Image (cartoon, rainbow, N blue to C red):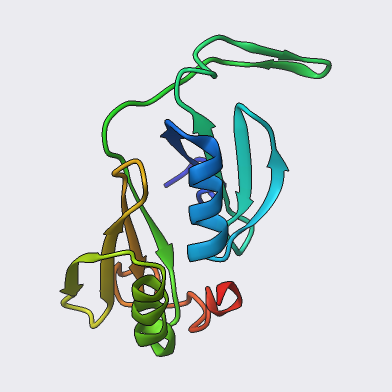
Length: 151
């Protein structure tokens, strides 16, 4: 590739129907820390410089003017998917964490390169995944304890 390279995914967004319920889920079940909280948006530290944006469905359709520029409107419907990286040694601890919070694991996958994934749903039906290294060929350098801080 001759042009500039992408450094990584900085943000990903989910759209939810009940902000308080979703904030409690991501904080209490997954251990994420909120960096910004409002009725429209909660931004969570998702580790390693990435951010999970949780938007109240329908409240970000219009452009949002700020003193430093305008954020284009956006929204989403239906069950979306995202994955969080976890350390291989934390796989069983995460299974226990989900069970302790009454969150059902819907699927488990062992990938050809040796990675493993736990799939489950958030309160809005989004498909969430906790994945160990070995899912993609470019994740071999991901730290083995990527999400240990969340427990």
